Length: 133
Image 1 (cartoon, rainbow, N blue to C red):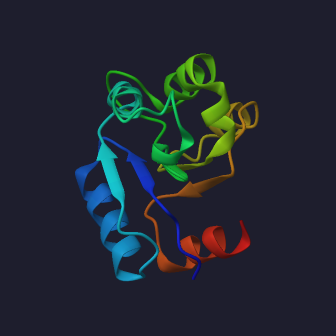
Image 2 (image 1 turned 135 degrees about the vertical axis):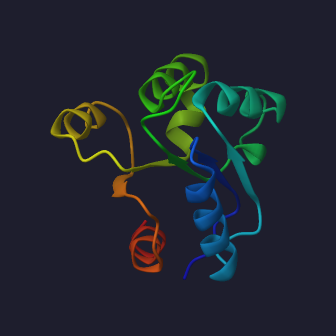
Image 3 (image 1 turned 120 degrees about the horizontal axis):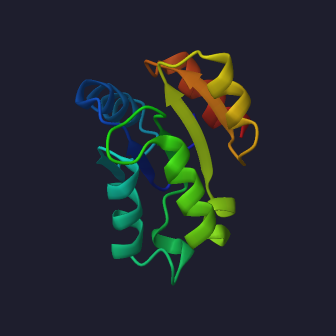
C-alpha cells in the first residue's frame, strides 16, 4: 500500500477516529495523523499549522464526515474553498460518512472531492483509495 505523508480526520465520532487511526498506522500508510471533532477545529488546525503559507504542513489526505456539530462537512468545504482555495485543490478530500442520503451524495458532486466512502473505514476501502489515487 502506498504511503501518505499526513492525514487529517474530521469527525465527531471518537470511535470512528480511533478505528481510522488504528488502521492507518497498522497498515503503515502514515504515522502523521491528526483528528479533530468538527470543521471549525479543522480550519483552526490548518491555520495554526501554517497551511496558508506552505503546502508542506497541509495534510495530503483529509477524511471528512458530513454530519457534525458546530461546523458540518459541507460548511467546512465551503470555508476551506473560500479561505484556502489553493490548498483545497492540493489535497485529496474523501467524504467518510454514515450518510447514504442521495441528497448528500448529489451535493458532494458540487465539490472537488476524491471520493465518497461509507463508514467504517476498512482495509479494503483504504487500499482502493490509496493505491488508485
